[in-house]
Image 1 (spheres, rainbow, N blue to C red):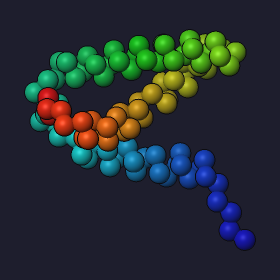
Image 2 (image 1 turned 90 degrees about the vertical axis):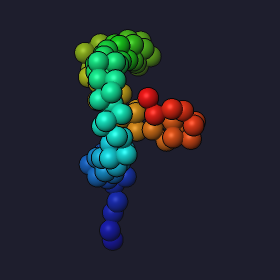
Image 3 (image 1 turned 180 degrees about the vertical axis):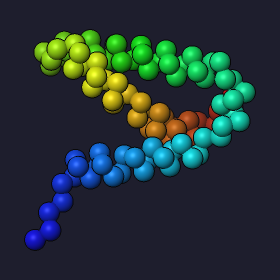
Length: 95
């Protein structure tokens, strides 16, 4: 009988393909026009989100802050993949 481990397939296979497919749809020239702002939002956004998520996750679960920060740093960069679909339907300007 063939067994299927969903969490392993999701993390090892599908997540990488989904992130790659999402990145292919982003035009680099659009990001390059706002280079400084894009860089600032990417670094500061992930850093602030990681700290905020880490404190909240640690408070809710009782895990140590270091583990919560590492978990947040691993999970939060995948959020833009979900946002891409929402922004595409919102009829906003490319910038």
